[in-house]
Image (cartoon, rainbow, N blue to C red; front, top):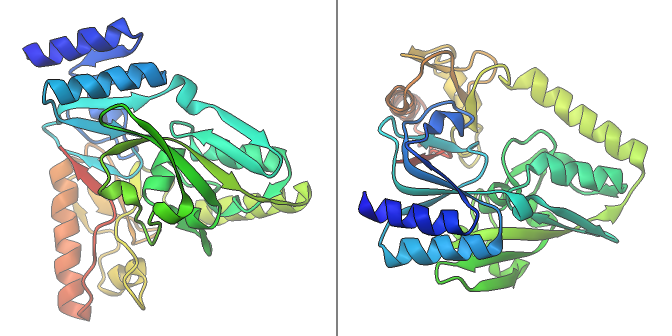
Length: 301
């Protein structure tokens, strides 16, 4: 506890907000998760550098939190420090056909900036929950496109406080993967390159995509989005439905009756409820179809 207090004091001295024992169900779209030892909200590059230097010096585990849209946090919470970017990491700047956007900004902010400047190429991302940094981390994609198709470069800070800007070629973007899955660094911002378009066409496409999401996805319940990666030659939701698992429930976790690729929190779901339901789905689908489903959501804790 002494180490956490030292970290908190150093972070507070740099203007960071420090919260001990903050419930993580307040910070995840699943509305699941026990308390973090300490949650530090960082608004400046200088503040982030101090926090990273201190967690390294004090040997404290450190987790970077976006908008919590792809996470399943343990019922016991998260040990060590959770870092939440805010402030200057939420800024978005448009220059010609390029947009530079901070990692903490909602992905919707980036999409709106493109729309407002009549730039096309990001319509696919409209309605995807999560932060810009999270979208890069997972190479978010939908409706035939993905972040890989628009990203030019990304800027990150390594755990020793060094800031680097790297090109698309170094980001290793592929299906639900980026270099940040194994690179120990914090995404600060990214730059995308788009094409000039007609505002009316861009708006119509965004509205169409949002309507399709609203119609097909269980947006009325807390969830972490699609639970499983798309298996080659199949769709996870179709396989789960084929196995008769739509509406299957364990505790407060349920396979969505609207889209079987989603597990929703219908009230009071725990992390263990979700894990048990995931295991049941994987076992059933493997047994009945021979297809192994790989989880897309990331367990933390």
